[in-house]
Image (cartoon, rainbow, N blue to C red; front, side):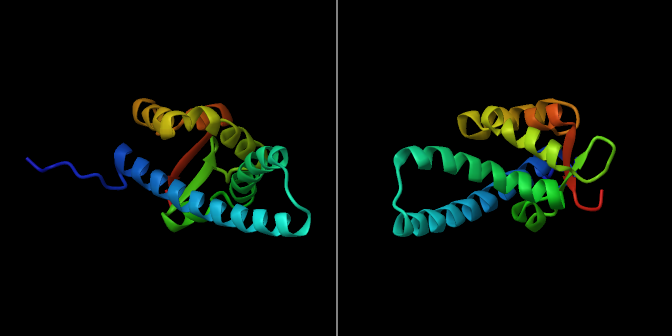
Length: 141
């Protein structure tokens, strides 16, 4: 009997790719926002309230802009993933906004909620994907 492997053709393999893409994107967003925060503090000063508003909006904007325009973030591109709508077309701005707004739910407990939903539901989709009508697949599928 052949030992199962966690390749890209399994739920776990796709989940590992998605997790890797999340790490790459988180590092990019943190770097970009860190540089922006330094620039703003040097130019105009900052307030804690502004940071609490700007950071979540910028984080959401990163995902919506990349997925809504290109169907993927840099992390997803690096790991060979793309976001598609239900009909197989590239993810649009509306769907990207919905799926990423729901990262609040999927990201609970260090993305454990999203990972469990991906593994236990049909189509390897997290909560945001279900409500936005999207799916993350390997490029070329």
